Length: 224
Image 1 (cartoon, one colour):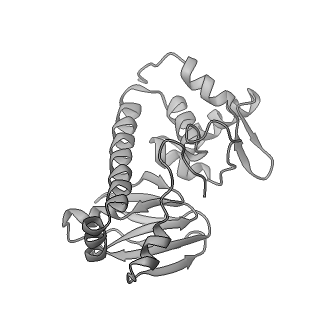
Image 2: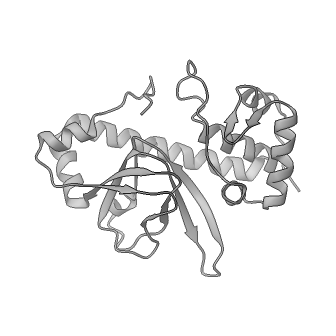
Image 3: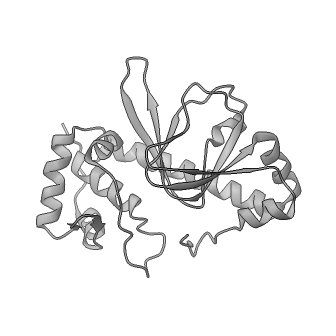
C-alpha cells in the first residue's frame, strides 16, 4: 500500500490483532459484490488490498458510480449513521483483501483508541471533501474535464508527487458512469488524451503527469 505523506498510513491490521478484536478478512476476485444496496447496514469494510467501486441504482434502474475506494480506505461507513439498509453496492474492481468489522466493534475502537479515532475521522473528512469536489465537478466542468479528473483520481495523483503514476484497470463503461456521460463520448476523449500523450495504453492504462497540467491549464466552462 502507498502512503500519503500528509495522511500517514495507520496499521489497522496491527490494531485489530492487539485488541483481540473479532474481524473477518475475506479474499475477493474481480467483479465480486462486497455488499449490495438494500442489504442490512450492520458493518464497515476496510480495504486492505485492491480497489472497489461504489454504485447506486435508481428506482428506474439507472446505475451511477459514486465512488472508487482503494487500499487503506473504508467503505460501507454509512452504517455508522444508524441507517438500517445499505444505500449503495460495493463491487471489486480487482482481486481484493477486505476486512469486515461489525459497527459495534468500530464504535468500541473509536472510544478506546485515539489514534484509530483520528485516522477514521480523517477518512470521513477526506471523503466529505471529495464528495463536495465531485459536485462542483459535475456542475461546472465539461465531460472531458470530468473524465480527466476521474483518471487522475484513479491513478492516485496528488497523494505522492514523488512517485510514478499507478497503472489503472477500468473500462469505459465504468468511466462513463462515473462522470455522467456515454461510453462513446468517453472513447472520443480517451483517444484525444492518447494522441496528446496524456495517457498511454499498451495492455494497461497509464496516466501521465501531463494530464494534470492539462486540467490545471484548461479554462473551466459549463457544458450545454
